[in-house]
Each structure stands twice: as C-alpha cells, then as structure tokens.
Length: 250
Image 1 (tube, one colour):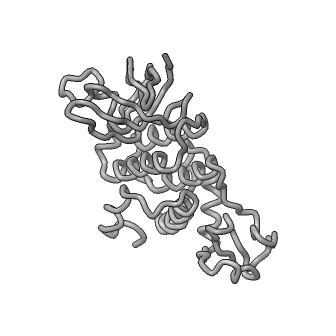
Image 2 (cartoon, helix red, strand yellow):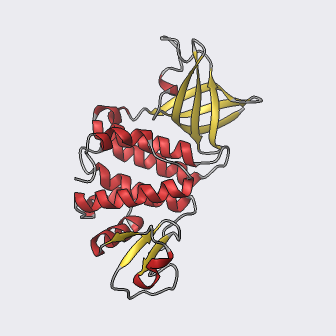
Image 3 (cartoon, rainbow, N blue to C red):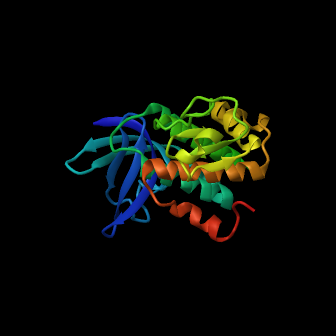
C-alpha cells in the first residue's frame, strides 16, 4: 500500500467503465494508474480521476499499473474550467508535464510547482500569460535545462551590443558567436530583462512584476520552442486552439 498526493494529468477511457490515468505524484513521480469503474456515472472515483484533480491517494502496485484503493480530494481546481484562458493554459501545463517527465522518477520540486501554479491559475482573472511564462522558466530549470542568461553561453562575453537566444546552446549568444547557431532567435533588451525577472520571481508575487503583454507573448514563443527542442517534441495540442484563432503574438 502506497499513500501519496497526486494530480491527474490525463485520462483515457478503458473498456466501458474504467480509465487509465497519468498521475504526477509527490512520492513516485509520474505513474500510470488503472481506475476501475471510474467511468460509471455514480462511481465514487468520478471526481478523483478527472484532469486537474488533486487528491490524497492510496495505491496498490500491479504488474503494469498502480490501482486506486482510496482517494480523498484535496482540490478539484474547478475554477480553471470556468475561464477559457485558464482552461487552455491549464491543459497546456498538464500536457507539458505528461510529455516531458520520466516515469516513476520523483521530483518534489516539480510536484510543488505544479500544485502552486494550478492553484494560482484557478484564482486568476487576468494576467494568465505572466504566470505561464514564469512556470515555463522554473519548470525547464527543474528539468535541468535552465537557460544561461549571464552573458554569452559560448564565449562568456557579458558586454555585447545584442544577444540572440540559442536553443542549441541553451542560452544567450553574442554577436561574435551568431554564426555558430544560425537558428538562434533575436531578443531585445526588454525580452531579456523580462526573462531574468521571471526566472527569479516568486509565483505568489508576480503582481509586483510589470511586463507588457507583447513582451510576454514574445518570451512565451521563445520558451515554447526551447522546451520543445529539449523534450524532443513537435508541438502541444493544448495550444493549437489559441494559435489557430490568432490569440497569440498579435
């Protein structure tokens, strides 16, 4: 019997009445869970097996799956579903975690980051993108891909007149090193300063950080590409709705 807190990242219908879940747990990391009977309308596990649901679980480990013996809800983060921006960004967070974390490799920092970000997202009425960009920076750092921002990552030059951001090198490259990565993206001073502010800012104190929506959009674009490069993925299904409706990067 294993007792641990966990957040549901993904659900897949299994046969007529059950679900296979991907759950990020505090003690075990990401695990696959068989929720038997959870698709029945009157199932006692109905609320505990939906995406975003944050629960205290008791699991039994089987050969291919963990099985739920008991689940007590801590927070459903229901308000995330009440706002279209919150919902899209919330599913983006879940998809990012699901696609980029290894199976059964516990990381308490990542678990606490997910919980805090979802809690704040459920409380926000606006400024969603600022929270998401701050989350992206912290999350990718916890995965081991923290971008190098203290000058040029290649030559160490800290006084360049202009920098670009290199996915290949993992940070800023100066004008002398541009030719070493022709795919690097130009960033201006405002984008650079916003990145530095958000990587160090506490999530609970983001209202004290003043960054324009245009800068946040540009920074999110850079970070999304950087994350996809490092986790070897082509895109996020959860963001396609926004992009197809031109809600990004106006």
